[in-house]
Image (cartoon, rainbow, N blue to C red; front, side, top):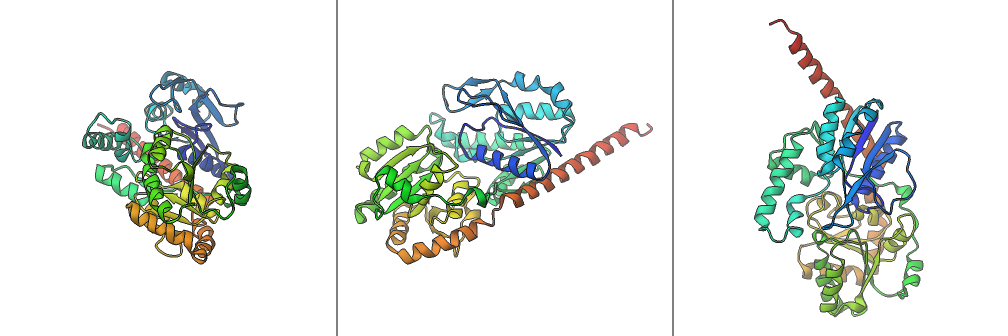
Length: 400
């Protein structure tokens, strides 16, 4: 197949959407398909990349990490894309990429699918604080339903997200296909070396959180949890890897809680080595987001043999197992979460058992397997589209 993907975000912008796109592109190309991506141009982008066309994009004052692609520049590619003989168009984000993608698919005469990566119902009010939360949730539901019902197929990363979209009134054919992980890219990692670089004693009890530092990630919760843990375990440390709009807020909150000696913000890390080292530096990985459609960082931590303590909300429910899954599931309550963290940090035998179980559990989310499932969904959508077009043509040619 000749697959065209469109996204409003991609590397060097680091987030789960970028990781998902890169993973599926790699695996689909391994299966013998051609995958071309249209994504924004960033000031920090490096040399040209095979299979990627960078679209001129505008700076966003409200969100300087991101860029808004110029819709006209995307649509100007219609003639060039028509020569590629595209079989299916896969939209990855609901902004310019969605609107331009729908128009491009119609112009090219190909079916369009989209992945619903972001739980906007619990996301928007963090960025529109002047609007009542009930109003932003209502708007997000209507917006999502309208966009999803304007597609030929919809991909969602978890059963919880599929259930929520059905409640919105989405009737588009939907397939649950999470982003997979590649065990070969999640091996090694030198936690001891990472601790040495940061001056962290080998015996110091250490927690790790990796992800975009954004309000919807509920990292405030983890700081309040840490405040409870340090009262029982005075030398505990939390490493937070990532960047994002909530960084200054979290540093200020850390100071207010008196956590300066218990927090290390280490920024974005190179995924090839430094990030693996960071994961492995932790005695446990902690996570409390309420808005995840999947929770890919949980799989990464588990694949590296790092025990997890996490809430199980929305997409993370599909990843976390009650037993023998390398994780302890906490309630959405700072005291319960702190109690489980303390239990794990104090029990070396439990940590060792969860560390053994974690990679076995994570292996269920194999990237190659998920790519084959996406390949099958593409073929189903293409077949259905061809049958529908043939039916319409037959009706149009029938004698009147």
